[in-house]
Each structure stands twice: as structure tokens, then as C-alpha cells.
Length: 62
Image 1 (cartoon, helix red, strand yellow):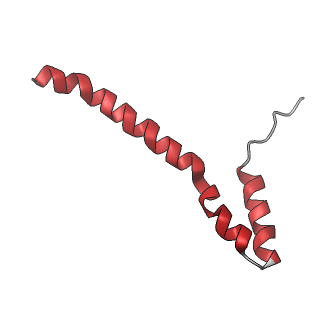
Image 2: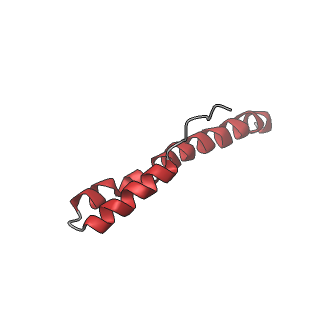
């Protein structure tokens, strides 16, 4: 049965790595509903700055 465990161990590690990457990709957007319902304009400005800093920038042409 050791061969079976050695076969599934790397697959299990890969599964956990991919599954945790999906959770991390949600990142700051978990807070979106809380920020949207906040009445303070400062919070919305800070949110827009935070979202812009996390979005991938387009490749620049040189």
C-alpha cells in the first residue's frame, strides 16, 4: 500500500496548492460588499486606489 500513498501524495499536494490559489485569487474582493455599503467617501476612494494597485498593468511598448 506504500506505492499507492506515494502515487497520491504528489497529487494531493497539487490539489491543495491549486485549491488554495483559487481562494487567494479572490483576495481583497471579499470585502467588496462591506466597502460598497459604507457611507464614507474616503473608504470608497481608498478602495479604488487599492483595486487599481492590484490590477495587472498592460505591457508597455518601448
